[in-house]
Amino acid sequence: MNDAIPTRDRVRIKKVEVLSDNWYVLRKTTFDYQRRDGVWQSQSRETYDRGNGATILLYNRAKRTVILTRQFRFPAFVNKHDGMLIETCAGLLDSDEPLACIQRETEEETGYRIEHVRKVFEAFMSPGSVTERLYFFVGEYFDKDRVGNGGGVKSDGEDIEVLELSLNRALAMIDSGEIADGKTIMLLQYAQLYQLID
Image (cartoon, rainbow, N blue to C red; front, side, top):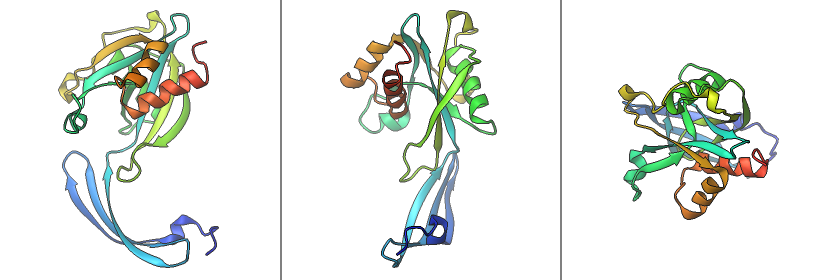
C-alpha cells in the first residue's frame, strides 16, 4: 500500500453513539480502517471529549524558582494514589484561545497576572481514549505580578494550594515520585533542557 494516502482516506466512519453526555462527552465510534497492507478492518473505539486545554510553567530566573499547584484529583485517588497531585497551572480552553485561557487560569489558580508567556509545544496526553490537545506554555513571573491568593474557583469545586519551589527541588520531586503528573514532568524537563533558569 502507498503510505502517501492521507489518513482521512483510510478511515470510514460507520456509526457514532453517545454513551454519556453528563460532565463531558463519551462516544463509541465504529469505523473501517485501511491498514498499511491495504486491507480494510472494522474497529470500534470509545473517545472521551472534554475539550482542549492549556498549561503553563511559571518560572523566576533571579530566584531560580517555579510556581506549581497542589490539588485533589479523584481519578488519581481511585487508582491507588492519595489524589493530591502537584501540577503546573492548567485549564480547559472553553471558548477561549489557548493564550487567553492560560492567562485566565494562571490568575485564578496562582494569583499571578502574567502578560508575557510563550507557547512551547502541543501534545495529546492520552491519545488512546481522550481527544484533548494540550497547549504548553512557559512564562516568567515576578513578585510584583501577584494580584491575588489564587486557589481556583470555589464554585467549580477547586481548592488549589500554590507552591513556590526551586527548580532543582521540583526536578528531584519527579525522581522521588512526589510529582507524578505528566504535563508537569514535561514542562519541568523542558525548563531543564532549555535552561530557562541558568
